[in-house]
Amino acid sequence: MAATLGTIYRDTADAHCGAHGCSCGWEPDRRRDIESLITALYEAAQRPNLLPHPTHHLPGRA
Image (tube, rainbow, N blue to C red; front, top):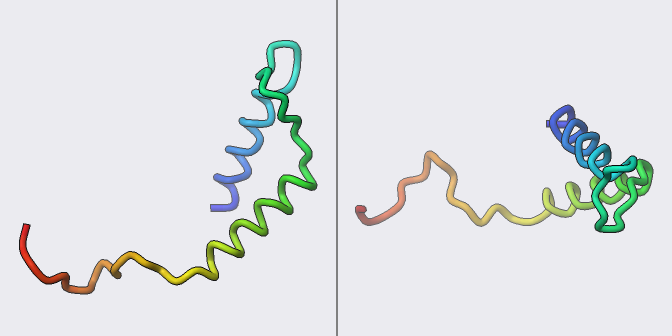
């Protein structure tokens, strides 16, 4: 998962740099962006899982 997130970050950062970069105004800041990602992952991991486990039987039929 870490390698995939790193690749997505690099691709996104590259798309925002250079003469033909995105004009949205975001500028990659590797240190700050990675700290924000760590915080977001930590907070998401602390939330209870609201989806049923795949092995749990759900009542009813489709």
